[in-house]
Image (cartoon, rainbow, N blue to C red; front, side, top):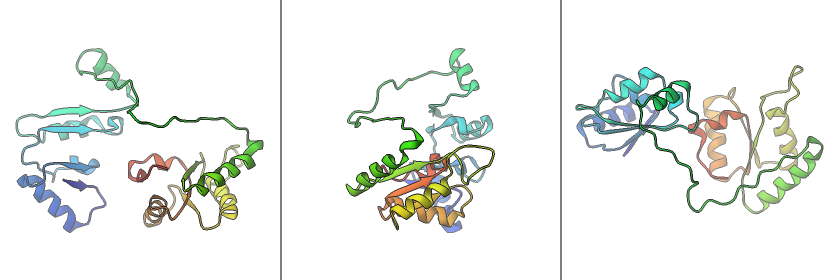
Length: 211
């Protein structure tokens, strides 16, 4: 088994491509890097495209043609785009629906709390990290805006860092890649207990821990 992404070094990428071509690597997980022309499979039989709405039509076609005798293609999404709905509606795509949650899931407690009670939320965060849990605090903006009355990640980070010094990390799209990687690793390894972030955490590359 191997991993292939656009961040791989040339030596690692060369070894992975060679293993896929000669068949010594039988299962590969990767990003869009898998659909590039230099990727050749010894005998590709099944391709699974996760979050398929993030892939273009030609990208999915390019992947499906990498098999020597045709392949089985499974596309998965929780956000069906119009083309996917059309294919499903007119019978050009077999559909399997996952209607039940995986077994063993813990119950989700969802609450709506007014901004006036943000102090209560911060106290709850303190109680949680005191038990060893980790917390995501997600904001819609990176910095404060005069035009939008929305929470900003940098402002929340400063407030939480003052309350829980050394335990809070900040993550948004303007940070350099190395800085984002260091913050994500620290959170995943438990060296940070709170991660203040924008919706950049939806990226698959950041999903490394289960707070």
